[in-house]
Amino acid sequence: MSPIPNPSTSRKSSAGNMKRLVLILVIALLGCFAGKAQTVYSCKYKSDADVKVYVAQYKSDADLVVYKCNYKSDAQGNKGLWYFVDYKSDAKKKIYFVDYKSDADIVIYFSTYKSDAGWRNNSKRYKME
Image (cartoon, rainbow, N blue to C red; front, side, top):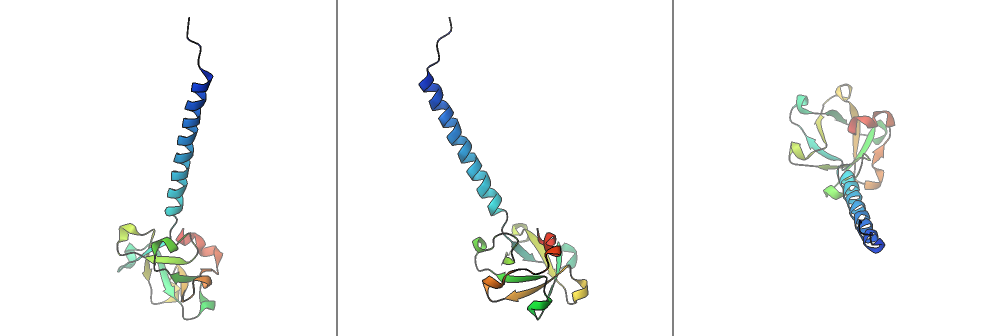
Protein backbone atom coordinates (compact mmCIF):
# COMPACT_ATOMS: atom_id res chain seq x y z
CA MET A 1 0.00 0.00 0.00
CA SER A 2 1.20 3.49 -0.75
CA PRO A 3 1.34 6.04 2.05
CA ILE A 4 -1.45 8.60 2.26
CA PRO A 5 -0.14 12.09 1.43
CA ASN A 6 -0.32 14.62 4.23
CA PRO A 7 -2.39 17.61 2.95
CA SER A 8 -0.59 20.13 5.15
CA THR A 9 2.80 19.10 3.70
CA SER A 10 1.65 19.48 0.09
CA ARG A 11 0.24 22.95 0.85
CA LYS A 12 3.55 24.06 2.32
CA SER A 13 5.51 22.90 -0.69
CA SER A 14 3.12 24.56 -3.14
CA ALA A 15 3.28 27.79 -1.12
CA GLY A 16 7.09 27.60 -1.24
CA ASN A 17 6.98 27.05 -4.99
CA MET A 18 4.64 30.01 -5.38
CA LYS A 19 7.00 32.24 -3.38
CA ARG A 20 9.92 31.18 -5.58
CA LEU A 21 7.88 31.84 -8.71
CA VAL A 22 6.90 35.33 -7.51
CA LEU A 23 10.53 36.09 -6.62
CA ILE A 24 11.71 34.99 -10.08
CA LEU A 25 9.05 37.16 -11.75
CA VAL A 26 10.00 40.20 -9.69
CA ILE A 27 13.68 39.78 -10.54
CA ALA A 28 12.85 39.35 -14.24
CA LEU A 29 10.69 42.49 -14.26
CA LEU A 30 13.39 44.53 -12.54
CA GLY A 31 15.86 43.33 -15.15
CA CYS A 32 13.53 44.46 -17.93
CA PHE A 33 13.19 47.96 -16.48
CA ALA A 34 16.93 48.26 -15.86
CA GLY A 35 17.56 47.41 -19.52
CA LYS A 36 15.31 50.25 -20.66
CA ALA A 37 17.58 53.04 -19.43
CA GLN A 38 18.54 55.43 -22.22
CA THR A 39 22.29 55.16 -21.88
CA VAL A 40 24.14 56.80 -24.74
CA TYR A 41 27.73 56.72 -25.98
CA SER A 42 29.07 59.42 -28.25
CA CYS A 43 31.19 57.81 -31.00
CA LYS A 44 34.20 59.38 -32.68
CA TYR A 45 33.41 57.75 -36.01
CA LYS A 46 30.14 57.78 -37.96
CA SER A 47 30.53 54.12 -38.89
CA ASP A 48 30.49 53.06 -35.21
CA ALA A 49 27.15 54.74 -34.50
CA ASP A 50 23.65 53.28 -34.37
CA VAL A 51 22.08 56.70 -34.83
CA LYS A 52 23.33 59.95 -36.40
CA VAL A 53 22.22 63.01 -34.44
CA TYR A 54 22.07 66.70 -35.27
CA VAL A 55 21.75 69.26 -32.46
CA ALA A 56 19.27 72.02 -33.29
CA GLN A 57 19.49 75.55 -31.92
CA TYR A 58 15.75 75.75 -31.37
CA LYS A 59 13.39 73.35 -29.64
CA SER A 60 10.81 73.75 -32.41
CA ASP A 61 13.24 72.21 -34.95
CA ALA A 62 13.82 69.04 -32.90
CA ASP A 63 12.40 65.54 -33.24
CA LEU A 64 13.45 64.87 -29.66
CA VAL A 65 14.08 67.20 -26.73
CA VAL A 66 16.88 65.70 -24.62
CA TYR A 67 17.79 66.27 -21.00
CA LYS A 68 21.25 65.11 -19.94
CA CYS A 69 20.88 63.21 -16.66
CA ASN A 70 23.55 63.25 -13.96
CA TYR A 71 22.70 59.73 -12.81
CA LYS A 72 22.12 56.56 -14.82
CA SER A 73 19.05 55.74 -12.71
CA ASP A 74 17.36 58.96 -13.90
CA ALA A 75 17.55 57.96 -17.56
CA GLN A 76 14.47 55.76 -17.85
CA GLY A 77 12.85 54.60 -21.05
CA ASN A 78 12.83 56.25 -24.45
CA LYS A 79 11.68 59.63 -23.16
CA GLY A 80 14.61 61.88 -24.00
CA LEU A 81 16.34 61.39 -20.66
CA TRP A 82 19.90 60.50 -21.65
CA TYR A 83 22.82 59.42 -19.54
CA PHE A 84 26.17 59.53 -21.35
CA VAL A 85 28.44 56.60 -20.54
CA ASP A 86 32.23 56.41 -20.87
CA TYR A 87 32.36 53.02 -22.56
CA LYS A 88 30.69 51.85 -25.76
CA SER A 89 29.80 48.50 -24.20
CA ASP A 90 27.76 50.19 -21.44
CA ALA A 91 25.52 52.06 -23.88
CA LYS A 92 22.10 51.08 -25.15
CA LYS A 93 22.63 53.38 -28.15
CA LYS A 94 25.77 54.65 -29.84
CA ILE A 95 25.34 58.06 -31.44
CA TYR A 96 27.42 60.26 -33.71
CA PHE A 97 26.92 64.01 -33.82
CA VAL A 98 26.77 65.26 -37.42
CA ASP A 99 27.40 68.80 -38.64
CA TYR A 100 24.48 68.97 -41.06
CA LYS A 101 20.79 68.39 -40.41
CA SER A 102 20.43 66.53 -43.71
CA ASP A 103 22.93 63.88 -42.55
CA ALA A 104 21.01 63.11 -39.34
CA ASP A 105 18.66 60.28 -38.47
CA ILE A 106 17.15 62.41 -35.71
CA VAL A 107 17.34 66.07 -34.74
CA ILE A 108 17.63 66.81 -31.02
CA TYR A 109 17.58 69.84 -28.79
CA PHE A 110 19.33 69.83 -25.40
CA SER A 111 17.13 71.28 -22.68
CA THR A 112 18.20 72.44 -19.24
CA TYR A 113 14.86 71.26 -17.80
CA LYS A 114 14.01 67.61 -17.24
CA SER A 115 10.30 68.33 -17.71
CA ASP A 116 10.91 69.48 -21.32
CA ALA A 117 12.33 66.10 -22.38
CA GLY A 118 10.29 64.03 -24.81
CA TRP A 119 9.50 63.19 -28.39
CA ARG A 120 8.07 65.87 -30.66
CA ASN A 121 8.11 63.62 -33.74
CA ASN A 122 6.94 60.13 -32.73
CA SER A 123 7.58 58.70 -36.20
CA LYS A 124 11.31 58.64 -35.41
CA ARG A 125 10.95 57.21 -31.92
CA TYR A 126 11.88 53.68 -33.09
CA LYS A 127 15.42 54.83 -33.94
CA MET A 128 16.28 55.13 -30.24
CA GLU A 129 14.56 51.94 -29.06
